[in-house]
Image (cartoon, rainbow, N blue to C red; front, top):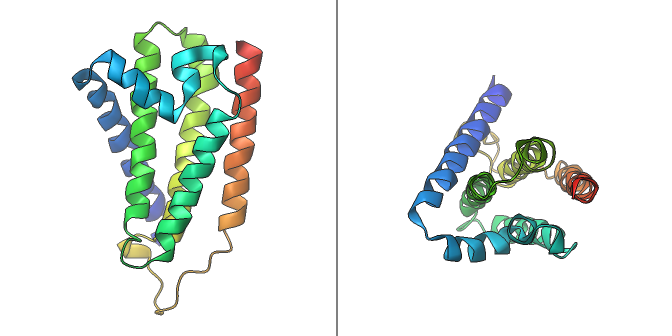
Length: 170
């Protein structure tokens, strides 16, 4: 029961953050949006002219920031907020891509599925670092972190697959 409730919790965070990012698109001017989205993923703004290493560095920086935040108990709650921020960037970038005329086939093959999987894996990683209130362990010990290396490996595998499909499509 607690495991299925955790996934519902993560999907709710994902959905609300994605919609929040899509709504944020309407409030900002395009020029400043391009700068913010370019920090998240340069391929969205520049297309195939973007650096190959840029999305890998962003993924690595999100992972490192989550690890650093999870080390200190006073700021550990921010790790789930960091996951929500990544999902909001996903919604913001998706809305930008669709509004600038990206072909729907390219969007459905390249951007949306891989970003969805990446955001969900990152949210699972954040929930391992800082479990939700209903899934906290009974003992006062920290949660075992044996799931962290496989989750990080899955994030990078997803990133590599996305990069290969991006270069195949573009």
